[in-house]
Length: 207
Image 1 (cartoon, helix red, strand yellow):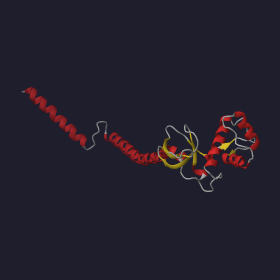
Image 2 (cartoon, rainbow, N blue to C red):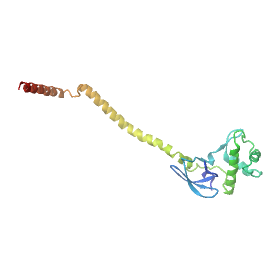
Image 3 (cartoon, rainbow, N blue to C red):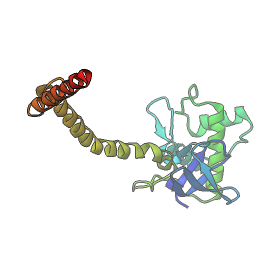
């Protein structure tokens, strides 16, 4: 099992191996009971272990550095339920941790995760290559699709612009042709027809 495939999922305890990603979530496998389930991005958020950083008294460090320090340390892993024991443990194995900004709940989680990683014999190192597409990418799949939609819209814009230009040209042409919208050549014919109608009315009245 490779470290870069591992994710933490909000709302679900422990750690998970990313099996595959989908547009609306991901298929994950629990490192504890080995069950496989679908986790929806509408309910859960995903974090690759490789992407998690920890506050220190200097610059932030990747979580894997804390795990490596724990692996090299001689102190026994504390009971994750004992706040004082957990803090004392990290003060020994990783004293540069910023204990004002790293909460006890975070330290407890690190202890639990480390225990899971060791039981699954996961090698604690960052991948040299880029991680495979994971749940974080899947979570953003719908957002990533937005530029494609914008591109499709942008392809339609020239057509709309052309139609608008044609409409404007028609309006300008109508203004040149006259307020009644008739072409200059049709105007005399309209006037002649009007005179014929008036003549017929006069003849009818005379009858």
